[in-house]
Length: 453
Image (cartoon, rainbow, N blue to C red; front, side, top):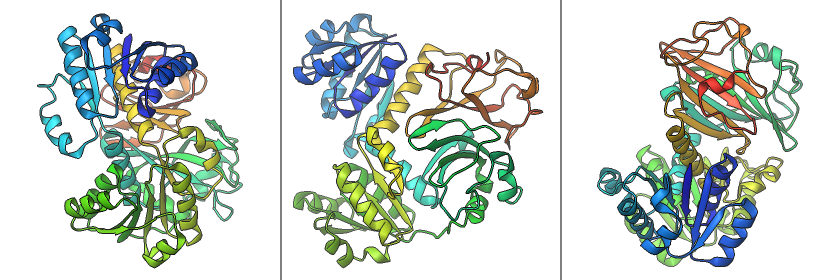
């Protein structure tokens, strides 16, 4: 498909990279010639320098013959005008806009059809939702939900005292008290792979486990990970992610303290979040953290705009034995290094929204049999896709042991009539079932039938 990405910042660049890798014809628009020319060379995409909200620039980018326009500039108003202008020039185009201002978010969801928006993305809101989900079930480094919340893929780290240290995958269920789970991915020394039955877990491994929600607490208990309900959380950084997250936490009855070094932002937060405690201070200072009661916190979330500061603050929180630590990062190319550091769970706003856009584009390109949910796990190196079986799905009712899947593809879970099944060789899938597929293939899986050799 032909796609225009307007705005070549962090989110726009991440989306451009992912869609370019999938073979789409991409045209990038930005007002800064040096940035867009460099990104165009790096990613081998066409580029146009100009204001994406003007007709002349959009026509130069070929909007009249474009399938999808994605507006990701830093200005919500520009993104909206860009989408409206594109729809005027091409009524059949699909438009996606990044909208970040909380004052616009709710009304735009209600007025999406009036603005002709196919999809609205909000990286900060997505990140806040993800962090809140992690804090709801402390102990996991990542959680991805499938099958309408009945199945999850969670990330765990193998520590020296873990009951899984040195255990072979084929005997994992014995270590977990007979509970049947499936390990769908492992990160080891910076490399991600789908394990086999003879894979032996090592200290430092990050493993991604598929399990019904009902047994997640049991897994944590067997691994010796204490689950303590969070009552008090400290947030370092009072930007948009902090705002959205605080609203979730307050609604859940959790007390929140936000440390922010911008006086104007502190005053604004005090007005819009009266139930939170707002502190004007430098959140990178250990003295400030201690004086503000860090040791009494159940959770520490680092949300500044500097990855380095977030990492250092999170590492300090870990040394103070804060039970739950979450680190926001903007540059996912650094996460390979972070896997060896004690920084708790890692969340990237741009990667979350990029995955949402890729899922939408794939569904457009493959209407029948396309994934209904797409999650990037293992720091974006492995995909977890959710498919719903229909009459076109191949091998309905055939045991999995008789099927031949493509290399680097794994069926992780089957939901049949509301029951979640960790599959074995005798398992089958039927019309209406939900099937979760894991892959780290270079070529994307666009439809369910693509998984078979």
